[in-house]
Image 1 (tube, rainbow, N blue to C red):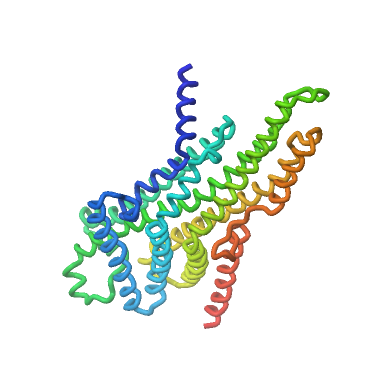
Image 2: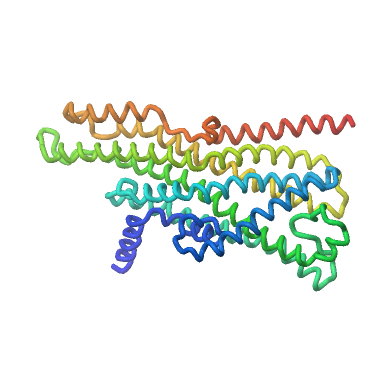
Length: 406
């Protein structure tokens, strides 16, 4: 009894606010100062504006100056270039959250509509399962990112304090400064970069999971719609003509059409929202993979082998960043294409002509599956991900051939 009551409470929570799926994302956006146009309290601006100015604007300006003054040695320049690519896509993501926050709120309102939440228990079960899955994955990524942050920033500091090993700056050396200035302000720069890199890590974590989560919501709604269509079944005996049962079936079909229309509008809305951030992420991901593979050609000294490991780990993360939207986009396209089969799975043969006419309307619309694109050109799919990785590998083979000749 207690377990059933607990399940019902959780079910009601899912019905009330599906947008709570992204409550952790919004919480971090407030902490990072990105939710400035959605917080009514004016005092929040006195916090958000300085944080964004110091940790994002000034941080990227200094990073750009560092890249300009970086020595043009490949083993030195390539790691700086890779990190700079990451900041380019980061800038577009931050712009999306800050200046498209009104559209994000509109997306949340669409999620909390009665059509998306659903009236049937199975619909609620599907949405609740995906909601809990997303929150669990977000927490796993959060723990993993923070563990990596601690290992990257604090373990070298502990090693320096305990064993007296050499301590380097965590992000870059600010080559535009003289050696004397860098040495004099070393600890101030260390604290600033350590603080700034945490914010930028949380930018990527909160926004990347948000964009993938938006696609996941559309995918789950298509699954719920398919389940609803497949279960439009008559409860009356075949030889009897039950008017109430026919009316119920017609109403269920109309609700499915409304649900499908809402999914289409939702997907168009999120596509407009994440462009051009997703397009830049895909493009930068392709460029980063090319540079990362090129860096493998370098014969680094033995004391820089740790840099090899860092570059490889970064390349893995960049591949995951473009893999997840591609995978979810492919799943969404596949699930929306299944709507045609679900239409034929419902109890339509013995239905009157009025029911079949409504069914034909849905069937014609469902013949074109939902295909999310980025830049309104490139589809979000596994094929796109494979093409990006193939392009990166082709560039790598060309560079390897040139490298062997020289």
